[in-house]
Length: 423
Image (cartoon, one colour):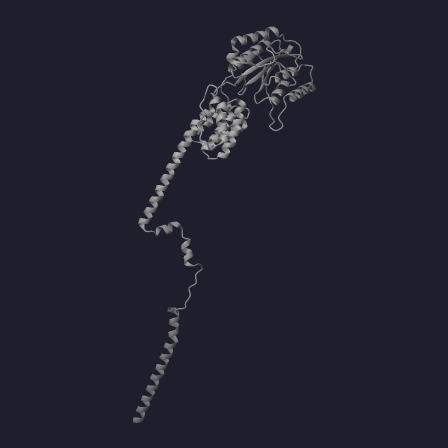
């Protein structure tokens, strides 16, 4: 009995020992696995694609401003608003000063254009810048039916000239040319007066009898010897029925030699205008002369004498497209659109160098470059060109202002006031 009891206790103890060993083995096996998943040692290392400091630098300014204290954000905004307000006030003051300077100066610049003192108008041909004009009046046999009307048209045209203009009338026939008042130009306007015009008309009608052929070469030589800027030919045709294209080419070559083009500018010293009366010219010599030696619109064919009179009545004495262009540019500048005004004035000044509007327009562009664009160098170049043109046209006020800018664009100057000699 005792033996069986001892054996039972022995087996039970062995079983408990074995169970304890198994549980201890399982706990040891599981313990390292749990530590690896949940715990980090002191020498653990973190790895990033880019450091956190670099990410904070690349944040947009708005995000950085958002973390500022509320009081600091309000103070910064107030300073920025005040600075912007001060800058806007200075800009407005400067703009008003520039506007006042331009709107005061530009009308002065355009003022010389508002007078017809250098306008020429005859038979529908209008030339805006004529100071010294010579009329070559055809007195050949082809003019017998229209010579008196041609004389009247010439005298009426002379009557529209101003005191600032000079003129001469040279009738020509065959190889002869006649100067009624010697070899000098005469002053028009009030200096000549109605009495002077009547005397000239009587001389042309009483002393010159249309006859023979017409060779204008000698008359052109006599005209150019008077140093004019414009020659107006009034004729029924420079070549007769028996002339050939060779005769026409010889005539054009002679005129080209007498009034050659400048090699650099392509311009001729003297502008020609041709008024063609009564009958067509088979060889077209008059039209070719006007095309080669004149400007756009300097040829006019009038098949009837009443057309000559109607053209005289319809010819206005004051307005022209260049003056209108300058006036439109000035209005743009006065309205504040100075950039567009500057471009318009530059186009006028560069495209029409033989017109009085050119120096005035160039000066206006210089004023805008100086006062609006703040570009003294461009203003100086434009003013130098304006001064040269004003000197050629006798525009004293424009020349004086342009020369002042060309000398020193930074010097304070005021608009030149008009005088009796500088309207």
